[in-house]
Length: 68
Image (tube, rainbow, N blue to C red; front, side, top):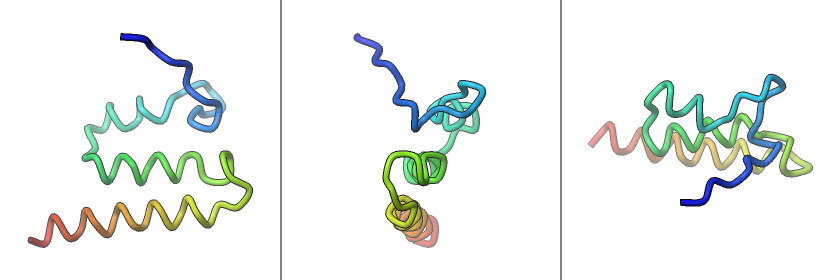
């Protein structure tokens, strides 16, 4: 399996990767994806609004799963 370089917008100032945070906290898919969008917020796209909206969408989906 080929390991790809992590894009800069998924790296913290100290080199910590978003995926490492998600793995360390054992987050579910939707919560982990929301965290990823929030961590890259304003770094990949010009406006942070799209990333925040995507994070909210994943969190709402997670709440629906929990409430069922």
